[in-house]
Image (cartoon, rainbow, N blue to C red; front, side):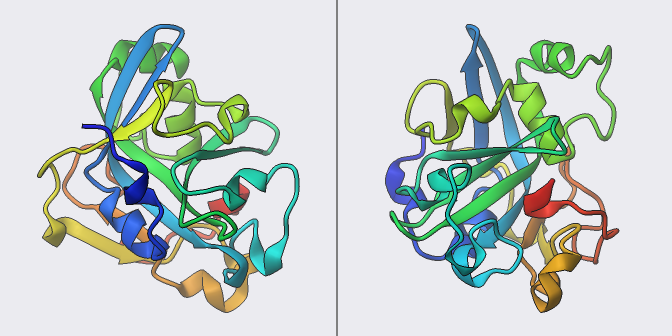
Length: 212
């Protein structure tokens, strides 16, 4: 069942990021359906979060979808080549977002492989936000698109992930966020194919997060 807008418009972005684990990311682009279990997310808490594009109330043409009502996509380009898919949460004017960092394929794996120019999947096939967006055909052209529509959406995954398997830790590559770099805003479902290992521990500080 497709998630309704009420799921996204809650005010606690950390809770939404945690609860997105085990949900099913779906896209139907060029007539090709892809579905995958969400296994890793990162929360970005808007104007008060130094790691967020909207920190301090910064508002640009790129970040405008973050200020929309929850339940739409925020997709941005990193390093001029990586499209990164975020779920906008909270209500209009509160720019909270959740970055989808890793998934585990359910349907459409051949299409995902083709888009990623791979012959076979490996352990890192769908681990990394740029890889996820590429596999699902998600680009900046979909920034602002409703997640209640028929192009990109998220479904309830039932009991695919048990709460006790979820680990929280610092986000990846956000040293520029000073003390906010240590906030436990990254959530990973351990023991699930496509889950990032070592998620409860600080990862390598590559420039990532909301700037990758």
